[in-house]
Length: 69
Image 1 (spheres, rainbow, N blue to C red):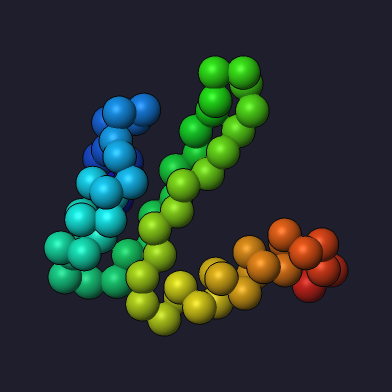
Image 2 (image 1 turned 90 degrees about the vertical axis):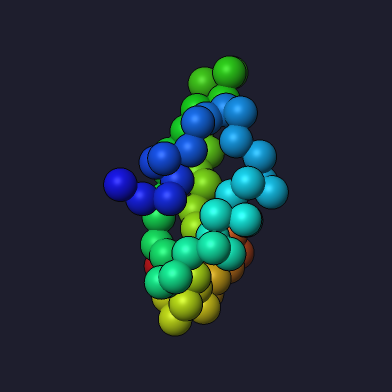
């Protein structure tokens, strides 16, 4: 079970998430797919370590609409 899947959504705060990530001994890679009350989807991800930079680049590319995702 990952860091995010242990959270109690929607009452988890960003501060709780940051504190849990800070207390983790190893690198983290966890994503949770949630839904807003109006039906729109959203993702929350926690990625630490070497994969964080790669994820940042991929997300920047996705946001900017580049073709290399």
